[in-house]
Image (cartoon, rainbow, N blue to C red; front, side, top):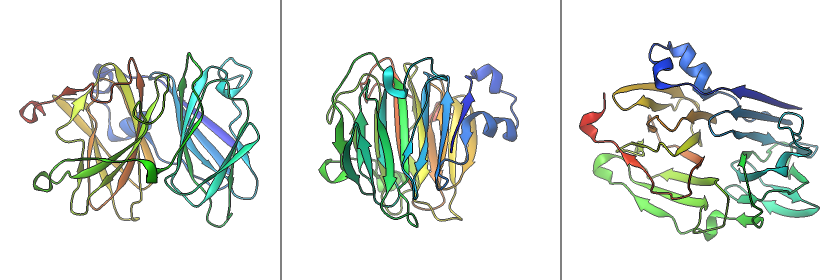
Length: 279
């Protein structure tokens, strides 16, 4: 079974008086991974499609054509995949590749057949997938976290020491506009992406996971001078428009996957926000 929900873009003026319920409905995706199902969200922020593919007994395939006005899903799109669950595999145009937890894949435009499977239906793979429009074909590339040298940033004094693993990034593989990575907080750290920033040229999505049931992440968003927040649980995602800050603090350790698309693929193209300007 496959389901796709569409979310339309909202301006900072529009969300100024949103209730908590309205804010969550607009920006929070509460469920991504259901055994045997594909759950996707299509955001009109740069037309990103993201969500979870959780195969059990049968292989699963993302089939989107009529919804996108094309003949097959990746006719005019590229796709990034990271497995956050049990071991499995991905079959691309008949070629099968194993995918253990934390393995990733870049799949280029015009790839016609992409299927997902799990090794153990009782411990299924959880493929987090992100797709954006593409204008050029780049080679398909498997990306393992074991081959990535992480960026170590932050400071224990400010509770934000973390390792950033860049998967789909110019240092690793070529893409049209998709960037994707994996951030792991050090023990004792709670903040991600602080000091915070915006980037008018790109939007972003965050998937928070590897959290205990009682662990929560307070994800801050909104205009820098009028911040809002979402309380997020394990394996939930949020949409971050280009005008919004995006930072979070957890009640315990957590991990997240960030995915971006927009005008460029320069990772450090950020408009930093002075801490004294946050309200």
